[in-house]
Length: 148
Image (cartoon, rainbow, N blue to C red):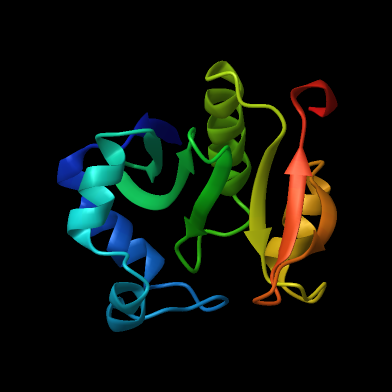
């Protein structure tokens, strides 16, 4: 498995992975209604954001994306059929290390507030701590560099 920084030429791949997931599925139309478009992602990658792609045998299977200005990891998605192979963990470690290298600590993320969701348990397993529920019902989790 290879982890590499995403480039602007990877934006369509990010959308293909994002719209392939089963849990937390959102269509291209739903993402657009939230302001998440190829153009806004390109702008983000040219500012305070960074994204990484996990590849297996040269094929993209997962990605993560972080925003240093907001101190957050706001995307981490794995293609169905590739869960449980370590891509998510490696992408999270990459995003966490990058955020901390930018001087951001603690860092945070939002996920569905349902312990039955795989993402919820995954983040807890990686040492993230829930600190509250947002107005939209998502749970906010934090992690500090000294709790790696």
